[in-house]
Amino acid sequence: MTAWRHGVVVLALAGAGLGPVHAGAQQVQDGIAVTPLSRWRYLAPEEQVNAAAAQQYASLLAQAQQKGALVPATDSQVRRLRAIAQKLIPQTARWNPAAKSWKWEVNLLNSPQINAFCMPGGRVAFFTGIIDKLKLSDDEIAAVMGHEMAHALREHGRERMAKAGATSIAARLGGAALSAWLGIDPRLTTGATDTAGQLLVLKFSRGEEKEADLVGLDIAARAGFDPRAGVGLWRKMAALDQRTPITFLSTHPAGRDRIIDIEAHLGLLLPLYARTRGTTADRLPPYRPAVPAR
Image (cartoon, rainbow, N blue to C red):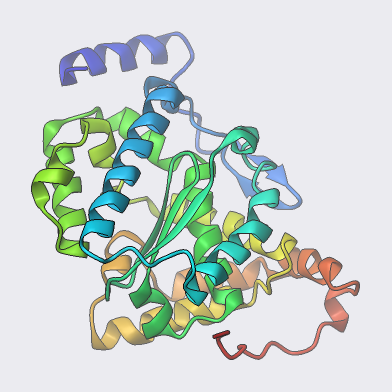
């Protein structure tokens, strides 16, 4: 779709009452307020977005395999990530019923980059750098994974793609990002479709990041992971970023406000976690960061 045609469709849908939802509109799930899924996303059909995501994810894995950067399924860290994901996935459909039919995948890429992502349709990738450099515990991995899953569940990427339209420039940017992360042939990544090219270069708004933090910790807490790990995670991120700028934080803004948001919602999240432990929030022991599993 050309930019001109995209604009015409946006105006037509807005006039028909399918424009963006007013910022004040909210839906509430167990006390956590979120904006309704944006009507903008209808401009990027789900089937098209998921197909594009599947194509780029498969291309990424294939090239990583050729370069020896795809960590094998037998590796202990891959088994660890997939075990955590298996606990999180059953909690995702309450945030997006379509997740019941997603073909979830979780893979680990051998790269020093401190990064992770979840593409539409439930395609998750972690980089060894984020686990090793931050010495992530299982609870902290669940916080990262839940956050990335939440972006896909709340269709933040699909909404932004619909607003921006598909462009070859975005595809090239996506290819360059993948090439930089893994040192792979940029011709592979830039050969992906325009839509797929945008999926890994999106910068989310502060509101979307806050929503992903809270929804992600909701998912993690219901799966039996301590949501207080979210605070420790972002403190680690901030401390490391002061010494070495982190790629992850270029698209995931950190800061004291983020930690304050999480702390302000622990009263809602801790009861969910406590329930998985057969107790109540006031009887939970003080939080102590766990030693990372090996």
